Length: 254
Image 1 (spheres, helix red, strand yellow):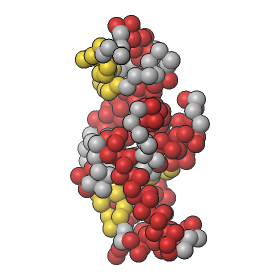
Image 2: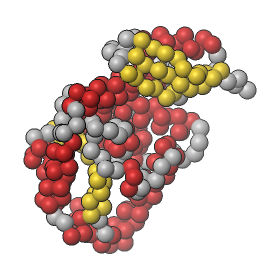
Image 3: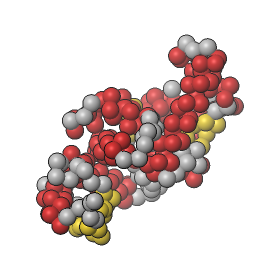
Image 4: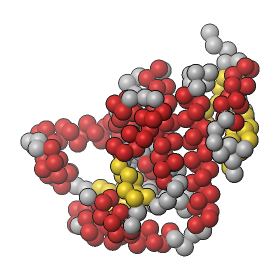
């Protein structure tokens, strides 16, 4: 597997989706629910989508806390969306022709050709719906990635060479700036996860941004009392030195 080869070559930790889900489950939700949150699209708007928002908040908090402590390679759906963009991350997509993918699925899952095709098409469609509904983007859009590699005429070892070269070029950028971005992202993600878990704010959704320990929160609330709850929850988060409730709209619930 490319991720394992990269981890060995670069001396980085390798984090897979299973490890991430196990870490995120510490927030008090089941691993099955978390797995569904990053594999399956919401079936309808409303409660199902809000649950997915909560689970993704826990997953993002787990991922950003994991990678802020040192160099790592994460392979799994949505890493390029959960970790943002910038000097702290090299977003890579691996593609391959359909026949190549069919052969790999048949070998790994012992499916016949028809089953393998159905499996690939279903996973591709779920990813398309997932990213479109939650992030408003097409996951196949090359703009979302820094590097796109086609394995049609490239071995895993050759792909590893290319990614390693690109990763080394990233080192010319400021390591202090990269760490600052990661720390801010981790702090914001942790604050968002705490808001998603606290009973007083778990029914709400927010945009959360952090800069140097100061957290800004945007979203909609049902009453002025909820603004106080938001401040209370966020200020208690480790690493937060201040909280700014920005552009919170009070919406009447009918």
